[in-house]
Amino acid sequence: MPPVLVVPAVLGLAFLVVPLIGLLAKAPWSTLPQRLTSPEVLDALELSLVCATLATVLCVLMGVPLAWVLARGDIPGRGFIRALVTVPLVLPPVVGGAALLFALGRRGPVGQVLDDWFGVSLPFTTAGVVVAEAFVAMPFLVISVEGALRAADPRFEEAAATLGASRWYAFRRVTLPSVAPGVVAGTVLCWARALGEFGATITFAGNFPEKTTTMPLAVYLALETDPEAAIVLSVVLLAVSVAVLASLRERWIGG
Amino acid sequence: MTLDAHVRTGRGTFEADVPLLVQPGETVALLGPNGAGKTTVLRALAGLLPLRSGHIRLNTTWDEPPSTFVPPERRAVGVVFQDYLLFPHMPVLENVAFGLRARGVNREAARRAARAQLDAVDLTPYADARPRELSGGQAQRVALARALVTHPDLLLLDEPLSALDAGTRPRVRAELGRHLREFPGCAVLVTHDPLDAMVLADRLVVVEGGRITQSGEPAVIARKPATDYVAHLVGLNLLRGQADGTAVALDTGGTLIVAEPAAGPVHAAFPPTAISLHPERPSGSPRNTWEVAVAGMEQHAHTVRLHLDGAPSVVAEVTPAVIAELGLAPGTRVWAALKATEIQTYPRA
Image (cartoon, rainbow over all chains, first blue to last red; front, side, top):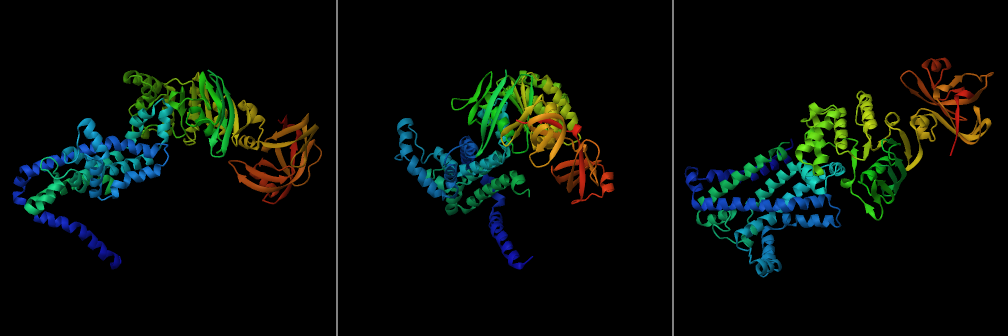
C-alpha cells in the first residue's frame, strides 16, 4: 500500500478517535456513579430522552407519510419538494432555531395564531424543545424511509389493489412491513439526531434547567462551571451514540 | 357475466387496440410475442392502467373514458402475476386470506375460507410457510388460491407458467388447466408459449403489435395460422398467394400446385417435414419441385432444421442421415420437393 494513502488514512482515523479516547481518559471514573445520579444529570438526561422520543414520534407520524408521498405520489414538483425536505439537513441548526423563532414566536405568523386561538406559546418551553428537535431530525427519517420505499417493488401494491385493498390498507399491510427495516433505521437515526440537537434548541427554546436544558445544553453550560460534570454528561451521550450505532450495525458496519 | 371489453390504451406512442368478448366459464388466451401489448391489455382489465378510449364491462361498466373508471380494488377481479408477487412478509395462509381481509371479512372467517382454498390447491401443509420457502410450482398455486378466494368474476393470469423450470411445468400446467375448467367466471390468460395457450385456453386471441391478428379455437389456429408469428410458433411453413384452381401463385415468387382447388387470396401451410430434398430434379410424381440453397442449419434433438432460400423460401426438417447423404452445408444447392396433398390452403382475409 502506498504511504501517500496510508499516512493520511491513519491520521484521519486518529483524528476521529483520539478526542473520544481523551474524553474517556479524563472521565472521573471513581466518582462516576455519584455524578450520574446527581439531580442535574438525571434531570437533563430525563428531559433529553423524553424530548428526543416525543420529537421522534412526531417525525414518524409526519415523516413516514411524507416519505410515501415523495416516493409514490403522483405530484408535480416532486424534486423541488424533496429539496425542501432536505434543507434542515444542511441548514446550520442555529439558523433553523432562528427561523422557528420567527415563525412560531409570539409575533410570528404561526405563533400568533397558536397564541390567539389556543393560548399556546412554544418558544422557551419543553414543547419548543420537541419542535426544534423534530425540525432538525425529520429529514433523516424522511430520507431513510423514502429510500426504502423507492427500493420496494411497487408491484406488490398493485397486487394488493387487485385483491381489493384500498391504498391505505395496502400501505399498512404490504408497503409498511416491507420497508420496516428502513423505517427502523430512519427512526433510530432521527432519535439520535434529536438527542444530540443543540443549536436549534438553544435558539428556539433557550436554556432553562428542568424545562429546556437537554444533555447537549448541559454539557455546554457545565464546561464553564464544572468541567468534570461536562465530561460525565459527554460520556453518557457517547455511550448512547455507540448504542445507536450498535443497533444499526447490520445496516452500516455489517459490510 | 360476460366480459365485454374494447381495450385501447398503452404507454407513450404504443397503443393496444384489442376488442375482447369472454363468456362465463371460458378461458381466452392472449398469445403474442414480447412487446405485443398482451400485458397492457391485462393491466387495463385489472384496472392498473386506465383506458384511453373503448370500454370494459362485466356486470357493470368498469372503465369507459371519460365518464367511468372503477379502480382495481373495487373490481371483482383476481390476478395471478407473472412472478406471483406473494407478500414475502406474510405466511401463505395470510397471503391467501388477504383479499378477504382487505374487503372487510373478519379474521376468523377469512382464515377459514383461505384454508379451504389452500386445500383446493393441495397446499394445506404449507399454510404457515413463508413464500420464499415454496417451490415455483407451489408459489404459483398459492398465487392462484389468493386470486380465487374472493370468487372474482374475472380471473387474469399473466404468463402463469413462465417462471417455472421445464421439469415442473407440465404438471403445474395440467393442474392449472383443471382449476381453469372449474372456474365459473371469465378467465383471460396472457402467454407467449403456444403450448400453454393451446392446453389452457378454449379460445386463442393472437396479438401482434397491439392488434389482434388472428383468433379462434386452438386446433384451428394450429392448423391454419394466419401470420408468420403463429406459423413459426406451431412449426408450419406459411406462404401467401393467389389461387386459381389448384395452382397458387405465391406473393414471394414461384407457384405451388395444391390438392384442393380454390380461388382468390389464400394461405398455404405445410409442415417442415413435408419437404424432401434431392440432388437432382425429381420427376414423375405430382409434386412441386424447385431449386433451393441452404441458408442455415439448426440441430434439434433428432432432426436438423434447414432454412432454404428459393422461390419460395421454406423451412425443412430432415434427419442427419439426409444431411450426410446430400453433403448439405450452408450454400449447397439442392432440389426441394413437396407433395400437393401435404399443403393445406385456406382463404385469407
